[in-house]
Image (cartoon, rainbow, N blue to C red; front, top):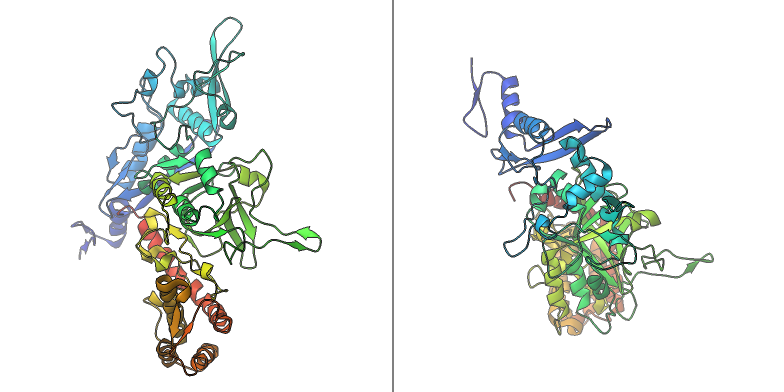
Length: 542
C-alpha cells in the first residue's frame, strides 16, 4: 500500500481519509469553539493558528499554545471555560498588564473590591461558575456598563451598573451630595486618553483576527481628537492630511449588533467648495434637503460633531464619518467579529449604519500609532502629503474635475496593517501599476492618468501633459473604440506645441472624465485581487 506524504510535515498516512484527518488536526489554520451558556444560548469563539500551517493555536483565555485542532477545542471548553477561578485571577482577556511604575488594579484602592468583583456582584454572579462569570463580564463590556459603589440604609456597600456615558461625567474621587461614587475599570495610563475603553477585550479574545489586534493598541476617540477633527481647514490646511491618517486603521464597533470593522483605507473630503472641488453636495430636491454626513445637533450623539453613518448612493451604501469640516469615506474595511472577505471600493455592504440609533451606538477606536502620526502632521507648517512613501496611492479615487488642483490632494491614508501598496484599493491614478493589466486600451488610458498625477504632484498648478506621452498611449491601444477616440482628441490639442497645461484646462478635463468613466469597471474588477492581498495582511504569519 502506498503511503501518502503530508505536504507540510514528514507524516505518512495510510489512506486519503487519514491524510485529510491529519491535515485537519495538525495543519488547519482556523477553528471554532462552540459552547452553551447557562441560559442555553450557543456562543462561539473563532481561533487562528499562529506561525503558519505548522504553528500553534493560542488560547484566548490563558494564552497557552496548543498544536492540534481538537486539543485547543478541548482545552478551551474544559480547562478554561469550566475550571474554577482562584482568588485574584483575572478573567478579562486584555493583554495589557500594569507596568512596574503603575499600581495594579487591586492596589489603587486598598480594601476595595476590584472592577471584576464589582461587576459580578451587580449581576449576582460572585458564586457562579467560570463560564457564567465570563459571560457577565462580556455583557458589561458589550453594553458599556460600569459599576457604581453605593451604600444602603444599613451602611453596607452594594454595587450597581450604569451606562458608561453617564459615569464619564464623574471624576474618580470627586465628592457628591449623594452617596454614589463611580468605580472606573483601571487601565494602563496613556498620555492621549484618561478614560477607560471597555468593549475591545471581548473582541480581541474572540475575533478570528485576534493575532493582529493583540499586537496593536487602540484608544477610544477622545474629546481632544474630536476638536481637532472639526477645526477649519482654511486656517489649518495640514488637517486634511492629519485627519486621514488619524482614522486609517481605526475600528468601528456597533454595540447594538456586535458588528465590528477595521477601516483599512480612508479618503477625506473638505466641506466647502473653496476648500475641495469634490466636497459632499447639499441642496434641496422636491422641497426636501438632501441627506448629508453632517453631524446631528442632538445631544444624544456619542461624540462631539463626529458622526458615523451609511449614505445611500447610486453605487450602493457608502460608509462615512462626518464632521463639521470634512467627511471621510471608508474605501476598504475588514470585518473583525467573524470571517468575511474584505470590502474594497467606495461602497460598504458588510457594515451598514442606516439608522440614527445605529450611529449613536457605534463606538470609534483609533490606532495609537495613527494618533501619534496625525498629531505630528497637524503641526507641520506646509505638508503636501501624509507620508513620503506611496505618494501616488495617497490620491483619492475620482472621476471628475481633473482640471482642479484640489483633485490632487494627497489625503488618502491606509492603516499600518494594510500599509503595503498591494493592499490599497486601485484608483484612476494607480491602475497603470496593476501587474495584471495587459497592454491595450485600458492600460493606455490608465497611463495618461498616472502621468497627469505625477506631473501635478511635481509642479502643482504649473503641471503640463506632454504630447509624446499621449502619442505613446495611442500606440498602446489594441483596437479602435471610445478610449482611442478620446486619446486622439487629446492628441489634437497639441497643435503647434509640445505640452499643454493640466490645471484649468477644461477641454482636456472633458476627455479625461470620459476616460475615467470607461475605466471605472476595470478598477472594480482589479480591486477583487486587492481583497486577497488584504486577507494576507491579516494572516497569522504576518
